[in-house]
Length: 302
Image (cartoon, rainbow, N blue to C red; front, side, top):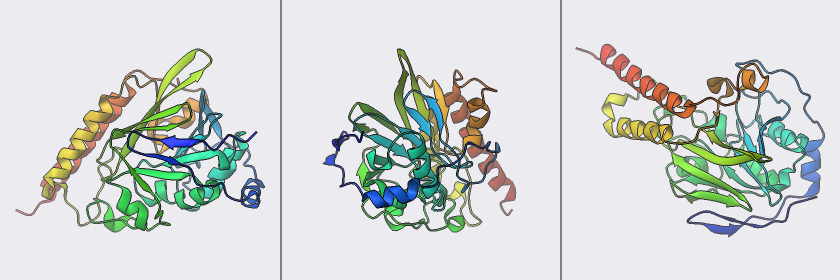
């Protein structure tokens, strides 16, 4: 049964979702349901796969190499990330294969404004009629589909389909759809608009906090030097401090599933939860930043 098209609220935004797309568009997407096939631990970014149930109302609906997370409720769903442009169709099929409807997605969120995580959002927004919400730091790139020079990886980033209707949310917003409430955490570093999210997910009386933590690598193109942008380094450190402070961090998910060993965990080879996972990831982020600065200092001309 289709969920009612209720209103979507954040701390600073209250608006009703756009009308659902036509039935034919959804049927075309749902014609090829993916088969459950094992994904390599370092999977292909565009390769479609079947949905995986993570815990409670939380589903993995991304590709083999890039995450997309579906949080479900009878009043509508929240989707986080759209992977690559080529992966969008597979994500839509995975949502349908999980027993949920693409047309019931009310909100699409994004961890960061790079083609491999935002490239499929425009198509998924078109299919669902959902609102696309983002922190202000990522909004110009989402709306244009083109990276800007304030991103350390600017010269290496491909353009992606723009989402001109994307709307801003506060850095500490709660995004709500019916009973769902997703906490926004500003964790800049990997990209200027890097954002992490947390929410409560329950299986019966067993409730856990799921954290979808953004990437923490300190990458750069051939032109950008972190040492020339001390304010960015300060923001990076603050972002890692914010990530480390997310408690509890019962189940950690990441935009690249391999970073948090998601496939072995879903196969039952490792525990789904790990104490201190957010703190450990934040420590890795700070180490990545320091390694980048050390490399730049070593390669600096005398």
